[in-house]
Picture 1: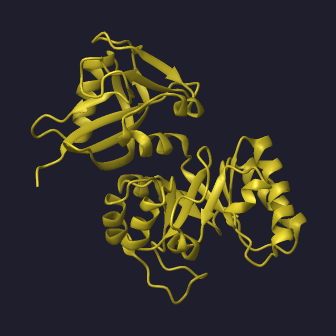
Picture 2: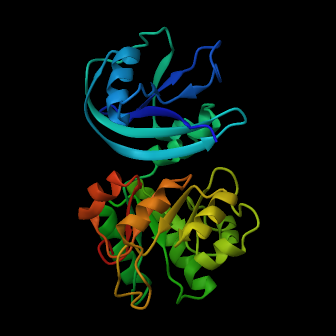
Picture 3: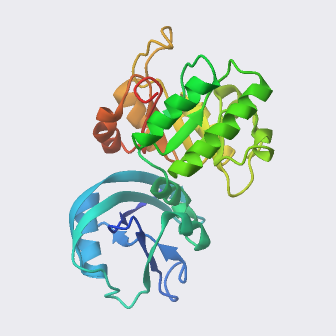
Length: 311
């Protein structure tokens, strides 16, 4: 099997939270499509070394601070590429198309309006998603749940999974509608851990499938424009998540947790191996908190998901 083409790319952010995209020349491979700027690695270069060189050559700016965002293996009919993508928020200079290419600053919500190469789908999701994914925990009643949610939103949580398996369908619907209103006011996204059909009644950002719902799915159960998340624990569930078109997954348990005392932890090495084979953003879940994010970023994951440390 031929070695993959190694490419480093940048999600370059400005102070307004916009991300830079560039248009591929019409005569090039996949010409006319938009992309995140970057280029092929030279022999013996690391991804970051290549990125610094390519961004200076293409845009005339110097990268001063970057962190790993996502790595994507993608097979086209004629080649396989490994995209090593970095999140860049510290740079000097004003970007311009040094090679004559069109460039544009866009909001992350606008990215879906542009046509990108197929391998960029997961990158777009990674750019759009935050670093923290809060999963709701125990609560006595709806009032307590909404108070806890509001406190988390005020702390800066911007992605919430409403998990409340103890509620019946109608009680969950009512709570979901109230939670959605709170999330919208805070500029946060709400994922429903429920039957995907509930999106017809509660216009949340998407659905997060339990492990059982994921493995039972035969196709993507949510419409285009909604996010699909899934709970994964091994390579088989990650492959199933890919088959049904999941936009994000949680991978757990990375470490032993009190909530699942009998479940063996993946450990950091197994977690990294699984992340390396994933084709969508992965949140580390299980015994982790915000202080673990830098380690998680270094292993190629999107960020940290959690209950107790957030809820």
